Amino acid sequence: MKIKAIFFNLLLLFFLLHGAKATASEKNEKNRDIKKEYAEFKTHHLKDTHSFKLFYYKKGDKKYYVSFPLPIIAYSYRLKNLDVFMSSSFYDEKNKRKTHTINGITYHIDKYSEKLIATNEANSQKIDIIDFSITKNVVLIFICFLLMSYVFVSMARSYKKGPIPHGLGRFLEPIVLYIRDDIARPNIGEKHYRKYMGFLLTVFFFIWFVNLFGLTPIGSNVTNNIAVTASLAILTYIITTFTANKDYWGHIFWMPGVPVPMKFILAPIEILGTIIKPFSLMIRLYANMTAGHVVLMSMIGLIFIFHNWIAGPLGFGLAFALCLLELLVCVLQAYIFTMLSALYFGGAVEEHH
Image 1 (cartoon, one colour):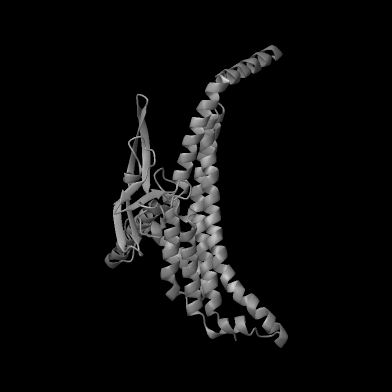
Image 2: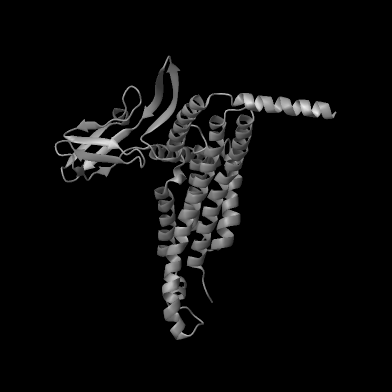
């Protein structure tokens, strides 16, 4: 038995060494190419770009990229000039980035920030522009809007035929009832919950759907964009502020039950707390979704960076397990954002006796 164990250990050692038998120069060069391609892949997935890069194929020594360009819309308010062209103008036949000049303005996309930059063709001075370009995130938000509209309109029509929904409504009805009965009613109250249901349902399904789109190969992680999470948090803050009753503002500016000198100390703290609440909503959603995708991309990168038969299956297994976990995280983050928004709404309309 000991001889068999030694034999299998030596055999395992041989295969491990055999997997890494390439010369140092060849291996380093191959690793550089793989790491470069992987960095581009990760950047494409995590950042908001101006095109959908689908895949590439090789024909001889040349690479041919298949992508879906998106429109670039830039307005210069000083020159009063509007330029519209496709993002494919920024790439040559070898998929290398280049500048594009139109109407005396030279445009290019920053390699690191993916932002559109404009300069004067004559003197190379930077020109301030307003960027209305359609990016991946914008496309997915529109797709999500159309999908949600179709789903909820179909669900509403099915109720006209009878009390029991049909089709996709049978799957969504328990979720809608859960948000109403277990999130809105307990946290906001029976008297006021109805006026907030539209926002709570919209924000829950929007975050859930865009998070699911982010797990697809061609998708973009919309909630990885701080501007998107900030917009959702600001909406929660605006609704909380403009629907709050006098008891809510009285508790902030003139807290009952405390000595008068303490009221002047606690008022700025309470005002700051109203700003911190939406800020925490924004950071929580952004950080959790970004961290999950970074870890997932890292696990996938292990498959290509390590050249042996152990790291490949191991990286694939970890990436597959993380994908399943991300499916749970998608709905969990939507639930947390909706629950906390309902808590803030409930605190704004709570009546003190």
